[in-house]
Length: 142
Length: 246
Ligand SMILES: Nc1ncnc2c1ncn2[C@@H]1O[C@H](COP(=O)(O)OP(=O)(O)OP(=O)(O)O)[C@@H](O)[C@H]1O
Ligand SMILES: [Mg+2]
Ligand SMILES: [Zn+2]
Image (cartoon, rainbow over all chains, first blue to last red; front, side, top):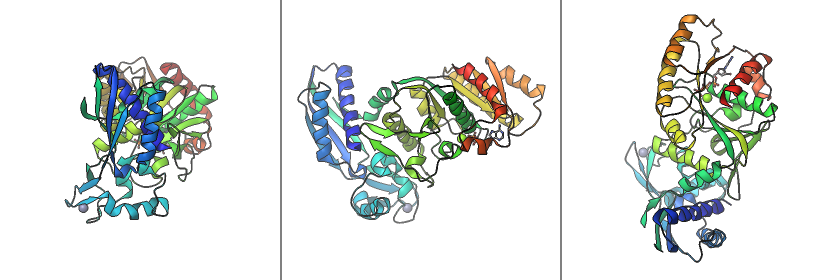
């Protein structure tokens, strides 16, 4: 379900950006997806296509790039990746290692509430790479 | 065109479209009754047949669901297009508590901004006569972020002590300088003291707003709100408050 909201947000953004940039047509849109957001990329792609035609954007090619989410502790300086801890965190959140509807899937920034630095236990760390779903680029004609 | 764009920015206006009026309830100072007054306003509006929602913008000290008697177990429901607000005593409520339960929320400023943008861009308020925003204390990330998107009137709350009025006046100036309309200052008498003229004169000098509304001390306020009812002695001042923000 959450993928629908994300797809709708991206399509709405593309529509607004077309207007802002004075584009008459959009050919390609690149979206990066950090793995922390636990987005089903196939579902996202499918929804992007459906919503693009619903919102009258025509035939847009969507390129989805996966990005690994990495963190750096603001206390001890330790760095780690989401993939190295994902199973144990999701087990806490979902009861098993299968991805579920969980608060971090809905709002990735909330990871600090649910995960501690594996080295020192601090909840004060930054997201270095793979932050959320982002619109990276739009190709189109004026 | 390239460069990272935050898709949430574009969704916010879309999600706020059905809201006739947003009212921000703030104060520089903590513990003066902002959340209590927000809850009173919500319940009274509901009783008057006005459709109302509350955005609990206090990320670290979320209290609206608790004040309104909601159990901390209730989680958020994601539906097609976003998050469904909880319906408590006929008021639509969105709060981070629905995502984190009783856990503490250690977040730095930049991330708080993103969390608020998520709540604004994903909450399905539908149509509302009023959206009330319960602000945390301070003049930081939450206030600055929300004031970028929600341009409605601002209610400043203080208690009748010199310390509180001192901080609240700075808050008044902060909000006023950003061009927000402050139709009323609420003096919430939770210290149950007599409000002397000296205090009121000081307040009127620095914060010349249309109205000052005094909410009396009420020992059963907490219990009453948790059951969705409004103590009789605060009905009249709350009705006056509603008149000020119409
Ligand atoms: N008029 C009143 N009479 C008696 N008690 C009150 C009154 N107003 C508020 N209180 C009590 O004072 C306490 C603080 O109120 P509240 O939580 O609404 O303040 P706040 O400004 O929202 O605090 P914070 O800055 O932490 O968000 C609560 O326990 C509340 O029940
Ligand atoms: Mg409060
Ligand atoms: Zn650490």
